[in-house]
Image (cartoon, rainbow, N blue to C red):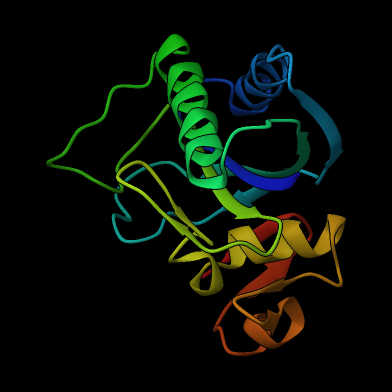
Length: 167
């Protein structure tokens, strides 16, 4: 099944961290990298008192024969393990604060899934230019919750300058 992931980092050498995260994701025997966007530098959302993020979107093929919800949970569990293995610690008091790596599942095909671990499509994907712009780069004809990416972007206030996204 085709899945889209969004990666983000704003601590350390962010481009190197994104490359390491991609390598770790692809170590999973049921995951194959299908495409990756360029890296975008993104103004922090919510908590502005931190470094800018480096963001990237991946398209992966996930060959899991489990029932859909269980497959989504298995994938999310694996991605959380990748985050933890790279030193991510979650600060519940600063939800949108700095992080060495963040990996979100944006889409799993066109399925809608809600479990205790993951909600797909990602509930804030349509509000975030740092998700939509790189997603549009690798999958320009895709829709999120029946809304084409172009339309979702047209509803946002953002500015793209080279590889920098202001929102």
